[in-house]
Structure formats: C-alpha cells, structure tokens
Image 1 (tube, one colour):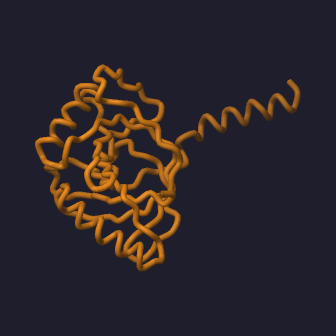
Image 2 (cartoon, helix red, strand yellow):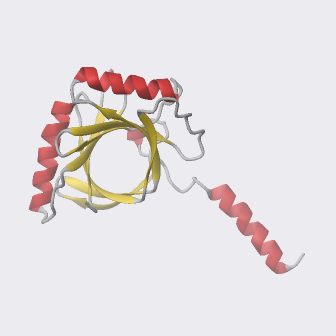
Image 3 (cartoon, helix red, strand yellow):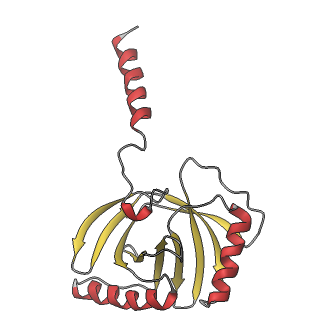
Length: 188
C-alpha cells in the first residue's frame, strides 16, 4: 500500500473516530442531545454563542397563551412522538405577536415524518446569538422580562435589539431547577 493511501485511510479512521467527540454538551442539557455551540465572548449581562447549523420541527402558535402553547406542543408530539426528548424547546417571537414552537432535531437522528401540514422541518444556518440565561419556571411572562433585560444589556454594550427573539427552555416544566435562555440573533 502506498504511503498516500495509508495516510488517507488513517485520516478517515481518525475523522470518523473524532466526529462528535470534540464537543461536550453543557450540564444544562441534562445529558440530552442539544445544539452544539461555541461560547465566543462573555459580556456584562449576556454572552455571544456561535451555533452550528441545526434542524428543528416547528409549528405556529396562534397566540402566546397557555392553551395555544399546549396545542402547539401537542401537534409537535403527534408528529415526533413521545421519544423526541431533546433540548431546548424553542419559542420564537417576531414583531411581538407572530410566534412558533420548535423542538430540536439532533444530527444523525431519523427525521419525523411530516404528517401534519402545520408542522414543518426547519433548517437553520450557522448563527451567532446573544444569550441571557435566567432561572425560574419557564413561561412567557418570565421570558418577556428577560427580553427587556437582555435588550438593555445589549444597548449598554453598543449593540441593537431586534424584533425577533427566542426563548430556549432546557428541562421539564415540573423540574425543581430550571435553565432558561433568551436569544437575539446577532445578524438581524
């Protein structure tokens, strides 16, 4: 075997062995699959994270009331099944009223069959987001308060807020402790 071929085979073995091994999910993922990111810069009151491209199953939320959130969650559960147990659950709000609920679809997992036309598979490109972490029971009111705090911290740092933001919830509503986040897309 030529030296070139041996080197190619060795590289192939090393790459396949190392794939996915270079990132350790943070504790708040609670030993579940969650989107891979790199924390780039820590600021006063927020951090910047670079997320790899991701896929999500997504459905529209009619409005940000509990009954509508539960209906959206039920639609995603019907499509993905009970086995889809990944973090985070993402609520994205645009212009203060248009909203969607998304569940993360980890790489190398089977994509759910889209049997409900109101549920779509959404691919998101690599993105840098501004993140504020907060505790407390996951909810829209708690999230909205943290949107205001993140926006204030961004403005103090000379950055701007956008009309689109996301709430990321990592854990069951019934957990004793909660890790929640609010995200602003840096590129918008």
